[in-house]
Figure 1: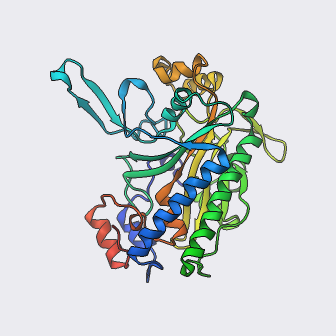
Figure 2: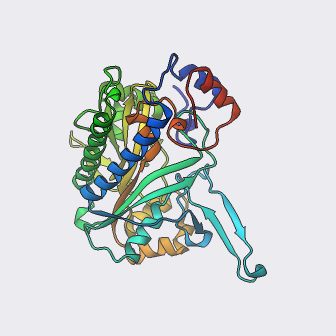
Figure 3: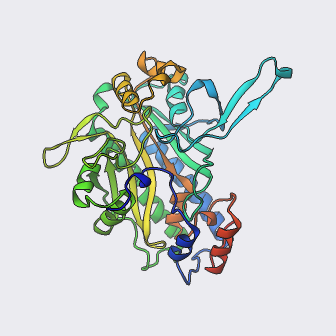
Length: 375
């Protein structure tokens, strides 16, 4: 049996020897650098506009830095393996200092923003979010610079169910499929038979079901295996400990709800009203995550998840107490990777072809040798 625990967090392939092996040989970008930039902004505007239309969202400003004491930074997982960039602002000759963090995602901030903007059930926000995640291993689709459409929407208690989650996921999928057709109409060369378009329908699978199919494989290999059967899936219930003792993947305890019981198609009890959209990338020939999202914790499930994660001390922060005291609204939300989506739709082999950030010299050399030109 392969090491399942090592596969729970710390995303990235893991070694540059493996990256050199898996990156495609004889690669040629369909679009040149100029057309790539044109396509990038046209697709971003299309997706942004249509996400707002489908989910009834409005665009809002989003922070790059937050106060440490607020508790609104996204910790990404619950094992402490990924920590934010932090810095001290001395301010006023040290009399009124602020200790700040660069956001890793705007997950929790968005829920506070829903309250701030006085939004009602069915109304939501979308952001053009930028973040820094310093603990990623930098490979072909992981970068320390993260750009997402981070969105959040007010819901009612009655909406906190699997059917509402699926309905929302299907609306997002519709936008992504339409964006693919849109950019292919603008740049016909992208409609290449080597790279089939996204399927019309996503396949919804519980994490428990996927483990049943591949009980001896760790998470990433289970995802790779299931994507050979279904090229686009939504994995339900990420965070709940499965039958083998491990969650499908670590998930922070204080935003997505991964403990609420649901029913699987065969009638068995599953857990979690959250999940990820994954597709098969025909350029890299690898699993490709596009979005992580979910119905958020309420007062009851927040306490349960923090207890399971040994993090009950967090209940004292403004964010967590706002949920416990029902000050913050119930919500659903998620993040859709901008560069990840563009990499897929523009048929790119590397994230650095559509986003500008830092890459180690070793990775640049590997890419250059394979005709992959990172920005």
